[in-house]
Amino acid sequence: MGLKKKDLVLMGIILCIAAVCSLVHHFTGEAGKGIVAIKVDGVTEGTYVLTEDRRIEINHGTNILEIKNGEASMIEADCPDQICVHEKAISADGESIICLPNKIVVEVESDKESELDAVMK
Ligand SMILES: [Zn+2]
Image (cartoon, rainbow, N blue to C red; front, side, top):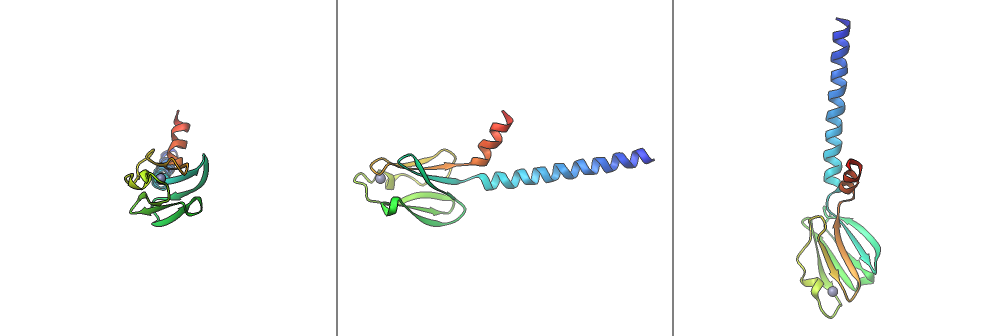
């Protein structure tokens, strides 16, 4: 009897840990997704979550990035080619908008996921 009860308790604890782990994994997986990193001339100026709608002035206002509905797009730029403004909105991992004349790169990242990958490998 004693042993059986102990086993049950142990099983219960393991189940709880598993449940908490999957919850944490789920939560961090969600939170880690959809971060845009803004780089100017190779230097990261800032990172922003795609879950928060906002407008970001880049490089003292030469470019304006808008985050809306989980996507990021360049809505204004003073560059002559305007290629970045015509780029489609980005939201998936690894997608980017590049403004060559202003040396601006906006890229979607998910730090948490790549960290997990690194641990698993
Ligand atoms: Zn541009």
